[in-house]
Amino acid sequence: MSVTELKERHLAATETVNDLKNRLKHRRNSLLDTDIFAVAGYARSQGTAPVSFGATDLVCCRTLQGHTGKVYSLDWTSERNRIVSASQDGRLIVWNALTRQKIHAVRLPCAWVMTCAFSPTGQSVACGGLDSVCSIFNINSSTDKDGNLPVSRMLSGHKGYVSSCQYVPDEESHLITGSGDQTCVLWDVTTGLKTSVFGGEFQSGHTADVLSISINGSNSRMFASGSCDSTARLWDTRVASRAVRTFHGHEGDVNAVKFFPDGNRFGTGGDDGTCRLFDIRTGHQLQVYYQQHSDNDIPPVTSIAFSVSGRLLFAGYTNGDCYVWDTLLAKVVLNLGSLQDSHESRISCLGLSADGSALCTGSWDTNLKIWAFGGHRR
Image 1 (cartoon, one colour):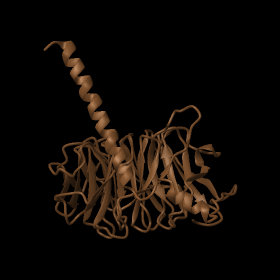
Image 2 (image 1 turned 180 degrees about the vertical axis):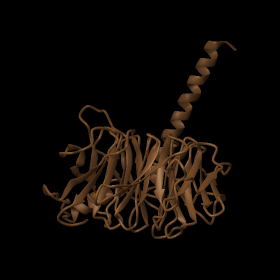
Image 3 (image 1 turned 30 degrees about the vertical axis):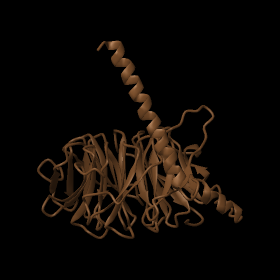
């Protein structure tokens, strides 16, 4: 068979695959009992007014400076006064969010860190990255002779980079990681061993890198994962052999997943520039959050978070924008990227304090910023 014939067959096969993908997408949409803007439509029909922000309702009150490389991840403690950040300068920094003081600066075994998380008590910090290991640090431990905090536990077993990690709520001894090896793992931190593996050889698992995870705060046995395969999946830690549901809709990598406060829904953000809201009970997509850009340059979503009530969705973008969405009306009510003291580069991570009083954003400009709600929390 000639090269020309092979090219023709490859082209024909590609067209067939794309046609099947489009037919499958249309079939999925036809099975939904609601359209993707039904929530916003119903809210408008009921006369729901959009959330409004005054000049002092959400302002940057502190800038945390100290990293010398791109900030990739951050997390708050449950008592809201401390933040941990991970940067490609090879350090974790634990900050006092009220005073801007650096409490700890931890030198990492691998500089290429991608994720970090506090334990429920705030006594330990986990991180992972391109070394395929999740490293645990007890921040109350004594430093070594060089002044460095030693690793208290290394969770080894992934065959690809560790993209995300999160402790199981109220469990100091268990955490979940997501990895470029297409799997998620539930770990016993005490022993350093895997408790369960989600995906991998199982057919219902992801077919590409796992980029993000989120544990359900209302039911810690359930967690969601987002992947380069353009899907999000729901898992039950008691049944590792298969995903509970697979959620379609995105047309690119799913970079961020986050559970809604009531635990019955979760949000996603992706390379297609959209955020989406899914219902875990029905498997349906409830809403799409997308802002039209005049230049047709659609910035990917890097990270998301919900307000305590769920009325607001915060989304960070690669162009430095940070939109505040009204989740009911699918309307942008504020762009932090347009405010004074905003970041000068990509928003790589963001997170809300446990009490909902402050938002922290991290950026490739090496800084973190804390945004305080002035009048009231939403």
